[in-house]
Length: 252
Length: 221
Ligand SMILES: Nc1ncnc2c1ncn2[C@@H]1O[C@H](COP(=O)(O)OP(=O)(O)OP(=O)(O)O)[C@@H](O)[C@H]1O
Ligand SMILES: [Mg+2]
Image 1 (cartoon, rainbow over the protein chains, first blue to last red):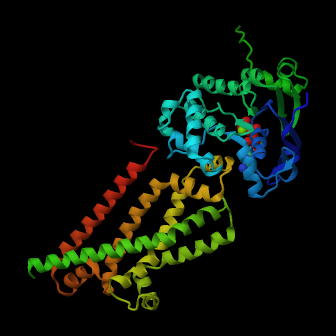
Image 2 (image 1 turned 135 degrees about the vertical axis):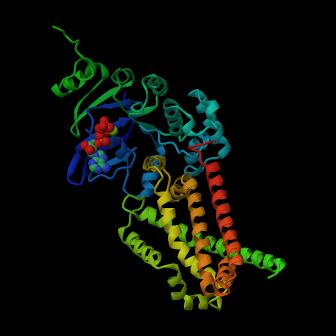
Image 3 (image 1 turned 120 degrees about the horizontal axis):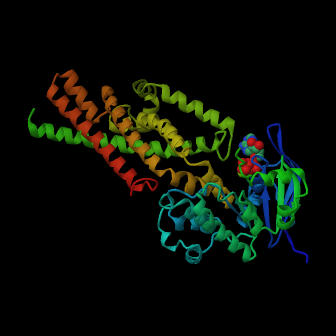
């Protein structure tokens, strides 16, 4: 079965000053698939998501969106950004706007959609994540997990074709991780195209169609979750996966 | 001096002072708000960095702000005369007050806008927002509490300057305090005038703080 390529980044080089973070890196995301990116801290996972959303300029290579090249011009970038939703680790909700205003801002102001229609959809989505009664609250009145669910709704309300999630549970207490990941799982079930960066390995195993293991700014290993988690091919991947398990302490 | 006469004089003085302060602060914001926005977005970590423009604005504002108000008042007298036709009186005083207020306001706006979290700005960009939306709906709206505190400080500072303008016949309460207290040794009138100034300042502070608390969504109710 051949699925359409939505985002493609090809042969990109990303440097901060002289430090190359990514070198000759390529990745394609196909319609309806869930790509999970894992790897040690600082290996460039966030950078990849930010490049896909045009938040980060690149030095070499190109990003294409459904075959159309995304150049550096703001017009071209903003058009893509409407189609590529992003959810951040620290939620980034507007503190002085209500939950509803947070969600409605971009659909109304950026996409120029009808206010009433957007509101209806926002309420529906809030209901779906169990936060309808919070519509008039302000972000500070919500727990971390609730804020993150609102941030997901905010991204969904733009009708994105791809959703990027950057360690969306990393700032959450363990009890709240699940409520957020459940939302992601249900989106995956619906067939949404998603790129997820996470440190939750059991979640990655459950949600991914394809796992990308990144180390030092290049793709070290790629495979289905079954392949990657059960039979990692590279030494680096084995080492990495071992950091998530602990050996029983043997006492004398 | 009769009580009635004094009462009328003070009422007029208060009115003149309020007129000068409010109009110059308003004009100060008309000039200072765009300048503050420009300073914020053109700075190195702003949304539209432009080191040359930032430096130029930065220098102009620093120079204007380092001139003591009384000197500024005298320095720009020819300009004041060209604008309003005379260089003394309440309306004329609005010119130097505005010139003093604008750079102060620009700086306060800059510091308020820079308080807005970078992550939130980035989130807005990630949703495809353009510069206009980011400036008005994110930078200005999200920092409105701090901007309002700035308005209170600006009003207070301009009120102080307007009293200083009394030295050269600027009108208002400062003028009365100088004329009666300093030239005619009528300490009583001077004290009452100063008391009115203090009360005005208190009211401004109090109203400003009350309003900013009311619109602050991050804290309080
Ligand atoms: N603005 C910046 N200036 C300089 N270096 C940066 C900047 N942002 C990121 N880096 C560097 O780029 C590298 C990749 O960063 P990135 O945030 O993509 O890593 P990551 O894989 O997301 O890590 P983590 O799991 O800790 O979030 C890191 O070594 C980081 O130090
Ligand atoms: Mg990261």
